[in-house]
Image 1: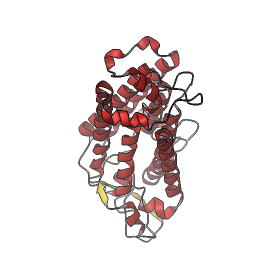
Image 2: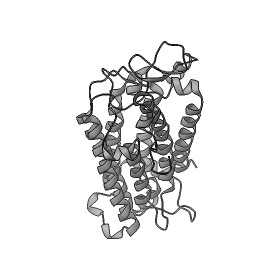
Image 3: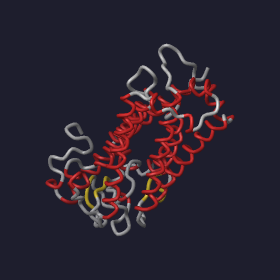
Length: 323
């Protein structure tokens, strides 16, 4: 029988490996990975430092617009990345995240046919595969919806007019990530969903959660608050300004660190009975860590090139004392 859980885990791990491969090959790194402000002149780009293109035949340089770029030695690689799309399409990720989160909660409530089909291909429980409780399923799915809703709000409120772009490959990867994660967040609770029948938030029993899961919820709240503050602060800056907020003096990309902590909290909160972490969401966390680490690396390089090496000297890219 097709095992949806293993397919989901494979999706995350193979996607993370593909990102590492693209980041390790200069030609791919220059053609596929740059997005956002690194792909537009500063007069119209967003505050997130990424890369742009230049016709100057050097490997790494600043353009006339003071943007760090890598030249594209193999222009045909653009075909693999697909056409460039407006950076504002990032909004679609969070529209999908919220829509999928609402969809699955409704499927739980009405015991919809799509849920029934998904449960059939999740793979049966076994001693090696503990299951989430019904309360854990509800909490995890609800927090995923809240996370997507906050990010959608931030995208609508903090977004500025921009001519920066993302590749079609990045866009498709982002859309697939949120579609898959809307299932991964509850997928290890398939048996509980099968046994329970129709499920709504009124069925939630908070006392059934473990102390570790409650601590995971606290971690989610704190990381979400930190990320919200970071995004609001970045949106308040003039374009291409070095952040001076105290938390940005700790790491170059604290908002990326917060995103990683949020997905760590999901793995803790959604842990099946008898386990510390949800293995499927650990795979999700690995993908998030790899994806944001690559972006944090180029962000630090951009700051160093534009504002001087001293501007980021001694600062970890994303995780204090580690990276």
